[in-house]
Image (cartoon, rainbow, N blue to C red; front, side, top):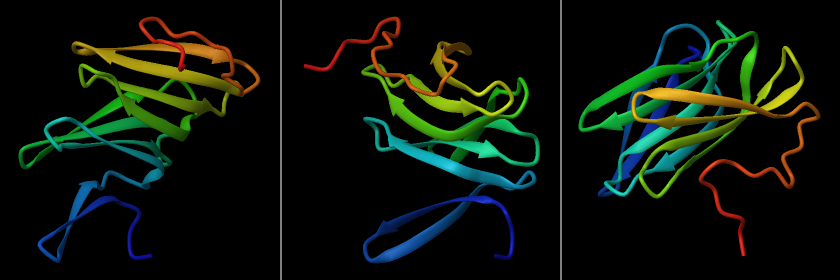
Amino acid sequence: MTNSDLKYALKSGGIWTLETVDAAGNVGQYTSLAIDAQKNPSISYYDVTNGDLKYAAKSGATWKIETVDAAGNVGQHTSLALDAQGNPRICYYDVTNGDLRYAVKLGTGWTIWTIDGGGDCRGIRFPGARRPG
């Protein structure tokens, strides 16, 4: 491995394009990818250097990177989904406290909940979420 950057690859017309999304330290572990209705990619990932959960979203040719949670060593094992309005929702592991956490971006800010101290989210109801089935 020549670096520890987060990269995004896209194949179009038989040609692969590779972009560096984040190169600030050892980043890009435990990634999860979602594509919005306009076909823009979003990625949740773990920043190893700082022990943070980060989120990157592409609009046009620009990637916007945000630190979602920096409270201790957080952000491993991310799972990203976009709701019907395109808002990111990320479930991830808080190593410092051994908790399963959930972050939602509504507007310009992130709201974060600790949903289970044992790392198991079965039966948890999230505000605004519907149960499957």
